[in-house]
Amino acid sequence: MNNVAVIDYGMGNLHSVAKALEHVGTQLQPETGEATGVVVTADPAIIAAADRVIFPGVGAIRDCMAEINRLNVGEIVADAMKTKPVLAICVGMQALMNHSEENGGVDCLGFLQGRVKYFGDDLRGDEGERIKVPHMGWNSVKQQAQHPLWRGVPDNSRFYFVHSYYVEMADVSKVTGLSVYGKEIVATVADSNIFATQFHPEKSQNAGLTLLRNFLQWDGASG
Image (cartoon, rainbow, N blue to C red; front, side, top):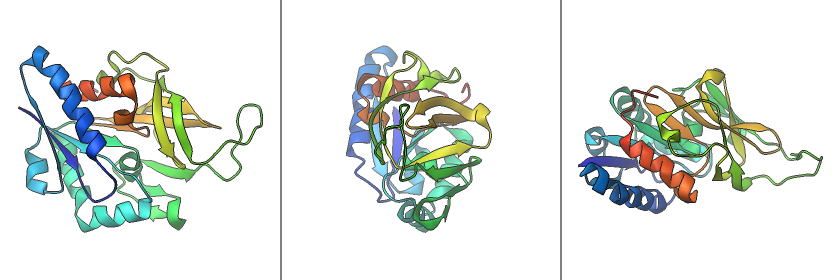
């Protein structure tokens, strides 16, 4: 059994993430002969026993970090990162950084060296036109480095984004995907056992499902 734990700290409806994982796990079973079990949980013991961990998040970072700290989710993620593949999604990716500008400034987990910045109230496109914040919709992602989670995902595939804040990484060598929305933004990062996406793979149709399928096969050591 390939067990996946989706960390539930009360921030968002995780049904779509779990269903997408179950779907790609069912597709994968005829090839591997191994069933995929998906559980949405905040139980540290269940998460510790899982083969893979999803660290999602939606909403304001202040509320997310308050629940992360209350439930010791940071410790759970840190332990998981030592031994197994971890996929962080959207605010889950932002929570891995040092600090976010959102809500007047919030300290985050600091597992990756980076800061989360606001797009601004006067974001402009290539031709000077004003574009909406939050960034909500489909954008292409330019792959910056080879990674097992990109296998079978064509370069410049489109993924679904919903965010008003974006990540600036201190070490650009950890950036594995870039997108453009008024400015160049980090779409994905990777470091050892962790891969993180600003977009929502579970809402990104074929490209997103392929990435999730790859996650279910990734050993975490070859990224």
